[in-house]
Length: 63
Image 1 (cartoon, rainbow, N blue to C red):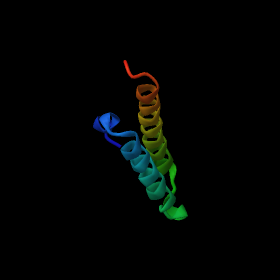
Image 2 (cartoon, one colour):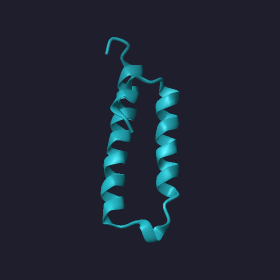
Image 3 (spheres, rainbow, N blue to C red):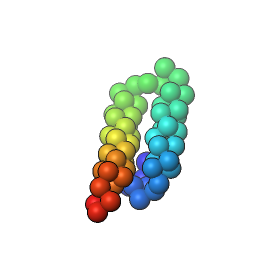
Image 4 (tube, rainbow, N blue to C red):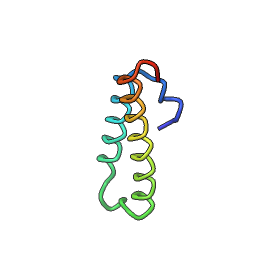
């Protein structure tokens, strides 16, 4: 996930996060090594930050 997506619409951010989850789900279990989990955690962390940014923006028009 790119940080410039934080300015996207709520629907676009949600779609991007869902795509990330699909990509993580599609990884075959034999490929789920330590590197996969480290990278996956980083990607999910970014996704949650984006979602929180959208919630904050949508909840406070002056933000």
